[in-house]
Length: 199
Image (cartoon, rainbow, N blue to C red; front, top):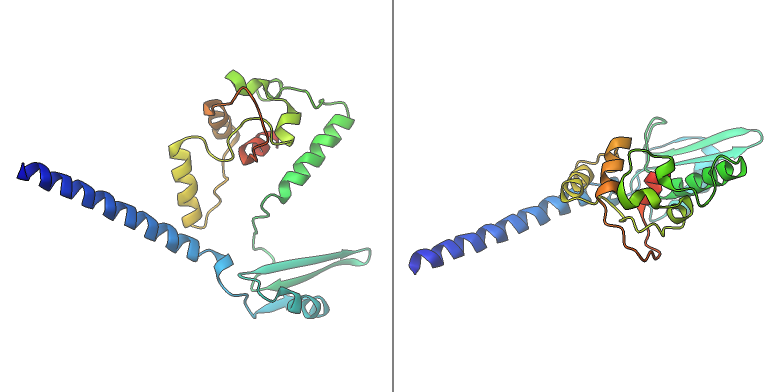
């Protein structure tokens, strides 16, 4: 009986320690992200643009880059960066992807009801029958993010390391989509993986 209680105590203690270590690592990774640092005072670029935008950036965090495009050219304002720094633009790319779909429909290359399986031969199973319209309207039934535990761990690891968590190649994306469970009744569910497939 004492041996059982000791093993149970050790098991509970190991689970607790593992959970606390995981939370500490995740919190440190999130805290170290650029968005949690105050906006830098190191600025460069077009002096007039920087002077105009700086008061508007009150409360901003991390690094900022701005471009003003006019018929006379492009003017830049940089806060704490150089011109080569890359930014994740988040879901802004979804509007560009949707615009490209509209262009493809206008050119007659596809229709809104074209099934993705006709365009991506690597897809098998129910994912093949998803239409482009379902993808662009977030009604495909695909999960918002990675579908397997391994992919979720890889995504979290990339975030902690400040790397790109969306670095799937075409084959990895197809494998992720093929493993996804797609419901028969499809309702709106914001899906990054659906837009990755559309792109």
